[in-house]
Image (cartoon, rainbow, N blue to C red; front, side, top):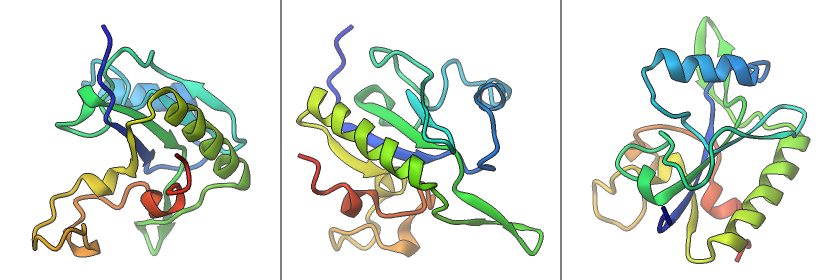
Amino acid sequence: MNRDIKYIAVHCTAGSQKTSIPDLLEIFKARGFKAPGYHYVIDAAGKVHQLLDEEKVSNGVKGFNSISINVAYIGGVVQEGGKLKSVDNRTPEQRSSLRLLLMELKRRYPKATIQGHRDFSPDVNGNGIVDPWERIKDCPCFDAKEEYADIK
């Protein structure tokens, strides 16, 4: 199968930065996913883990998985006042590894757009921008389009 990749979608796992790869795989299994949610995951130490071959479809963004490569960093939330709060808590190692991974994926898929999961939300008011109030999710908890705009 030779997939036509149109997006490189950036995610957070929306969990603790201490989550292990086996724990993450168990979460996907418990949700009934036939495949992991991401092709690649970057742990807090910056190590890149490939969970799924790029030729296979992951479960990252409903409706876009067949045309996307999904990558995530472990983290994205903190416990605050007994509630989970979205936060960009990438470690310096995750930031570095994520940038390098995205550069490599963009080299392999030059026509693909790099964007966050949140950027797949509908533009409800039609202004050409997915405004914060229109986002279905905060993921990846930072503006991936802006941060990686220089990766060509």
